[in-house]
Amino acid sequence: MTNVRIGVMYDRDWAPEGLPAFARRAEALGADDLWVVEDLDWNGGVSAAAVALGATERLRVGIGIAPAPLRSPALLAMELATLARVFPGRLVAGIGHGVPEWMARAGVAPRSPLALLEETITSVRALLRGARVDLDGREVRLEGIKLVHPPTEVPPVVAGVVRPRSLELSGRVADGTLIAEGHGPDDLARVRTLTERGGAGPEHTLTVFSFTCVGDDPDEVSRTLHPHTEGHGAWLGRPQEEVFAVSGTAREAAAAIDDLAKAGAATVVLRVVGPEPLDQLAAALKASGRPTPAL
Image 1 (spheres, rainbow, N blue to C red):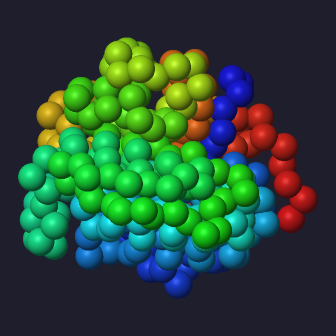
Image 2: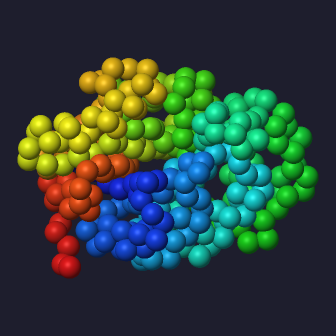
Image 3: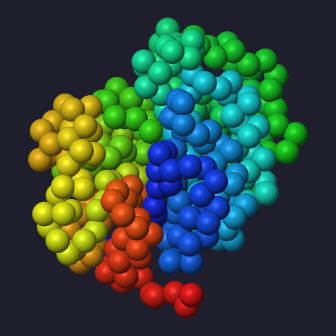
């Protein structure tokens, strides 16, 4: 098995009160990461990350993603710095455009989503490094902002983006790129090309979300995945059968994770669908060669 971090998503549809126990169990099973979601009307990403970090001891927690229009970069940097100071080395901050329709509903749709994302990521990263930020940008204005308690270990800031110009932007300003569900190994080559066009070097990481269903009955796995991959295919503009998923038997799921790793993924985050998601996670981890923990 290629060296790759394996994480699990705490799905947005799961009630927030279940997060602490889920995070502890994922950590006990040997997962490297747990990623929380911030979608309008669901849960807050920063608060969910705080819950997961506080419930665990070593698990790295990712925010996937904080929509740039919803927060001032100053406030977002303050929140991230607080988490990073209390839980050093255990946070990844994902920032993205946000769904345009949702941003319009919230009354925060920017004039230029690209400019807003670039100015947000640039200023947040600078603030987390302890710099004073003065910015009179197209979308962001900051005057003499400087964190009193910047992180002792600066967390990576990754861009959760899909489209070509945004991927180039990620390569220019972010520590890594967070890739949405449905993208497979061939897509990662295209992503790497676009981020490198923006200026990304080999240290620019790729984190891939993937729908996951692990089971021995192929028909049941297909039925369970179908509503998720069908809807996501429509969003991606590709047929349902071309939506990549980590699925099948545990061995097949492990092979799919390995394929993503060989294509350049540093982290694969499993968005598990179907019953007993932690049992599915345990099976995928075991088949990937992770040692069975003593529970």
